[in-house]
Length: 88
Image (cartoon, rainbow, N blue to C red; front, side):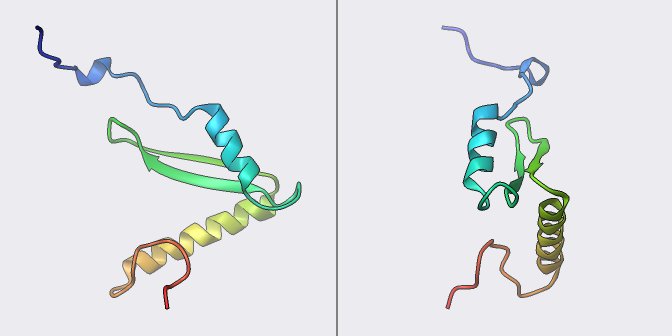
């Protein structure tokens, strides 16, 4: 039996299926004017990817501000890097 020895150049670029992104969008927000998401992840080859979809510029600006605050918090010592409200 041959050994599996993939070559990095032969691995196809990873793309999230459009159906998953559409479902994520539909699950976000309320109504037709407050939906949106920003998703950051690392693909199988180790390269980062960011997907975003928003209804309005206001939602996009809100997401950008939330990410900005999250990144600023990560730079502070003694801050937990998890997402969500603090546990009591």
